[in-house]
Image (cartoon, rainbow, N blue to C red; front, side, top):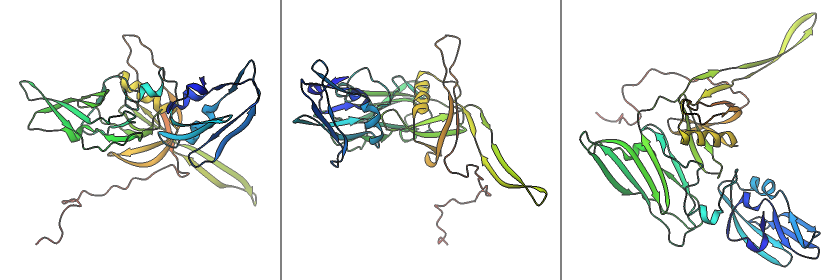
Length: 338
């Protein structure tokens, strides 16, 4: 719950779920989006000098298409323009404190990645002085650890979310040794990655996380196909005929062993409403998650291994992948060469 007098420039949508205003008379509350269209307009009766508007999360969250949206809140004769950041969970500190300190991710610990995996980070700079995005890469050359710092060529704009590709492949430098880890920094924000040879992922997905930003999730465990068929039949001229058949190609994917960072990512995928399949780092088909098993515990002798059941969003969910004989030359070959 937040009092109208305490509303500032930036808030998570979860902070605004209950709006309170001080009044001893009936008061009109209006909320308008960036275009000026009213999304809420009502007159409220005070109780003991307080007016409360409930469940604004359900009203505003679907109107935030990506990371943030702007709304104008009017209580009586006073109006405030508020930048509202998507938040599909409750954050234990306000957006004004969180945004300058963290990337927009629920992961708060070191991540696992490999040179073949895509990694995205999103930040929303609201600081007076825009930070530089710096990567500190660590290499092992066979005898010692070598650290190299570089600044990424990212143009940040105040108050606008910026997506940064921090995939390990772009930091590989064999002249320095084998890449074993790297840290991404932007002002106070820090995210650490451990680079190793991970199992091949049967499935990879790009999801909009709890803050509306894109993140990649890889499933390196077993995969189970469970197609379902619905057949509809009827008697026609004394013979049973099938007049309709629908196939739903459902897949159950196991994550494989997860560290805490992986647990946080899969938990976030479970609450995500927008997911895309990844094929060699490129987003292809939209998918819908139909079931999850994200149960885990903190026992020392157990390792989290979660499952996600999903299907393609298209009505014809089954897919044939054409297999062609490999070519001697790839698409970069100059066929005009003599």
